[in-house]
Image (cartoon, rainbow, N blue to C red; front, side):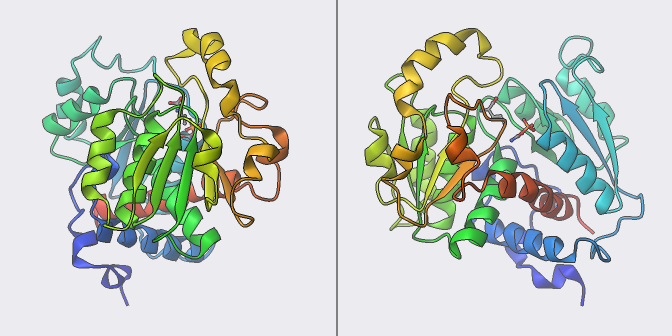
Length: 320
Ligand code: CP
Ligand code: NVA
């Protein structure tokens, strides 16, 4: 039986499409990606059910540093029998040496898809609108959808369900928080963020998440970390200063210290609650060693699942 016969019509409609935001996906497409990711995870080490035999390729553009995204996209392409081409910050001069549109129009003549990590989300939009091949967001200032697909896979494995789960976000209302809130809404999980005033998620993204959310799943933003974490099934945090915000790090450390995820805060979550972090972590700032290295932490499962979730995304967007 072909691996494709396992997936719904809606998931198969992803072929040729771009993934810039979690909102580019329907609930059915999210489940299709997670199911394919689980199947590819189980098959790992044996014969991969998708094998392009060198006929598909991915340009990977990085304007910023990366460990997980870099390794998992390159390895994922290789495991699918595809060809990854990594283009680092100094290589193509995106928007400087050559316009974003011209870079995209050249790439589409050679490769099957582009994955890009950029400072400004609008660069991804321009790339998608200029190229006739799928463009995948590998992190922008606005969203990190590939991270959240891996996290939903991790939560489904750990909690046994997504629908009806209560997911707390503590800290900066940033790119990862934006994708997580939309992802939770799509799978019917409730999302509650605790952020200091002035560091909340964008109101437009909160409205977008609410607009796609299943009736029983809520999307809330509060200021009190205990209120957010209380009785939650998962507690997620991220760095207080994202890439590009390093100059604000000391001011942010002062503002965010009450939002540190430590054992005292985790004690307000459900007993079975999972701790999530997309990594890299700044130990002793947003999370303590005891939580990040403790039994509730799923941070390394999330990192592992980047590989499986992205292989599913590549397989569905690029096609057989
Ligand atoms: N979580 C994540 O995207 O890690 P990298 O920045 O190392 O790719
Ligand atoms: N919010 C972080 C995530 C890194 C994976 C950043 O943008 O730097």
